[in-house]
Length: 267
Image (cartoon, rainbow, N blue to C red; front, side):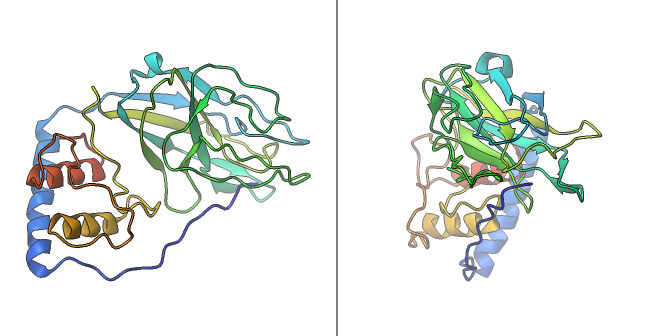
């Protein structure tokens, strides 16, 4: 049984005019060319168990989540990485399909008993926080303040996150209220980790407007609006130095945004 945690934002009118849309089309083609010319980013695939949990459970039968050292994943603090869900698992008696999953960085590989809410004592905050609900039996709290969502049952299948300072391990597991009815009969449930950029000179998150929805073309609309001198529609926008090279306003930041948005590297 999965946790329903979909966040829906009210639509806002587009803020890109005809000329800006023409520029956006040209910049998209430019970003595509950059991706074709460049080398593919390094990727590591981590198999996931459909019952793997790092959050609290009750009267349940979870298994351990995937726990990997950052070294084994080829990532380090300061890197911008993308964690994408591959495949899916089934849950409940109707065998509904889900990919509800999350992750948390930690300074150690310690995982405490399933009866405890703070099962990862070395947890380090990163990414966009996700709030999990209570356990199916007993409605006990499960939320881990430091974790973030990777996939859900609607549209999200990845998260871009900067690896926090002090992190040594990455925990990846299912976000659910009941685990004992989860199965992965075709063994395709996994997480793909991609380093988008490294060395501390990384691009910002593609959730430019900070509304928690991504990938979302509204972020491109809002970036171009702010880039052109307009206000931030949400009041929570990032800065226009998207590639963090210290130069702005700079069209290279638009190229970088489109590259990362389309699944490529920080350019």
